[in-house]
Image (cartoon, rainbow, N blue to C red; front, side, top):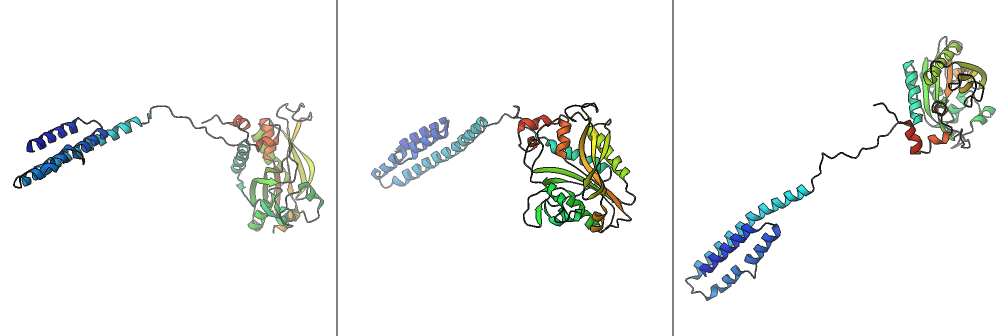
Length: 345
């Protein structure tokens, strides 16, 4: 029996060292140490030995089992580490391969125009003022010399939430709020933002659009200051050779009021499809702030004067980039938007 135990031990140790995978090693463990293994069979035969030999054989059998188990455990550590390394190797990502380039976004053409206008007026000392899009009737109309029932309100038919709350129809309420908050102090602001009117959407109209208005209030502010400011704006946006003209108009919140045209940048004033053969393109409305508007905001209209102007970035973008349908700005068609990708780094 002693010889058989030594033989089984040597066989098991040889097979343990020969095992190349975790599965092979597990099979060796089951074959030699399992309930039906040869070492177990030898131990079952110990009952036939004389009583005085049983302790010796029992100790030897335990020694053999312990040595085989220790060898199995040590070999298992090695094989498991090898298996993990091989798996990691097979799952390794080759970081030397070129990656898939991510598509970079670009500012929307409207955003580009708004930012360009903002940068211009900031460089001229203006501040940017913002206000709520859901506005009170008072600030949207009454504080701008448009009392309830005034016929000029029909030109700005809007979306009413209650009788006294609506979606603002222009960014002029920001001017009224700012004047009220300043308490008679000088002001130099522009007010960009979204506005809403109940227009039928077509190539040149939208129920939602953007607007940028400007306001300057102080001592000795004149119409000539307004004209000079608008001339700088026109040249910056459409070229240094642009000329402007001011035509009489009507706005309830300015007096006198004007419409500003620029000389056509396509034909140079000779007449084309862009300017409708007139040589001029209407750009914005402006005027001197009405004394009633100043007084309602707490300003002394005998001491202080001001000018205001309002423009639509959509119209400017359409002219600048040759866009024929205002709806292109809002449909998020990538084919349209990719035309305005910036090439500079």
